[in-house]
Image (cartoon, rainbow, N blue to C red):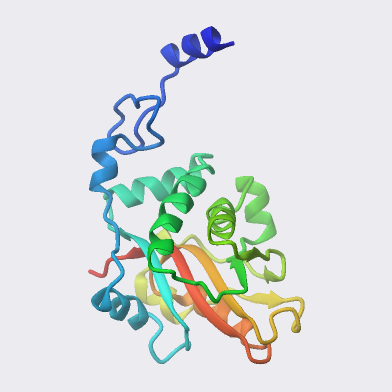
Length: 230
């Protein structure tokens, strides 16, 4: 069996999703060099103000954290593209383990009761075959020891592909609708809403507004990446 694996690896080597170099057996998705170049958002007062500003005056949050800066043509864009469109769902596990390790250093989200993934519309999930957020959220749930609660928040309408819309249009004409099918399950609970990328925050805001129909709910947000402005 090991011999067959060696033959397969010889003809179909694993490549770094950023630079396409052949990965060592101990490397996952990124070569060591590219992994050190990944633009991590380190949690401090400045980055907290940056992330909180996205939702300032729109939604009251307990906390918000993102793992990576997202720039066009950057490493993070390649990672997200592979995760969403190239059937590389396990990138979510890779990033979830990495981010959870950083979050545990600071005891972040220690008082969260449930992790809730931002849902895809059923037709889009069927087309893609998976929700790109699922494995990332499940990995955070496992590593941070927080209960995972999908299927309570449901996407009730499809949104257009964001890359085809202008930034202002995404912000001012967000018509994505969500539905919370149980208004009691999160009562008096602290919920961590998990998504892939935050840009204008419109989708996450719509999720929060639906969750806030629950009595005495607290909401925090966690995303894989934050889009750099400009």
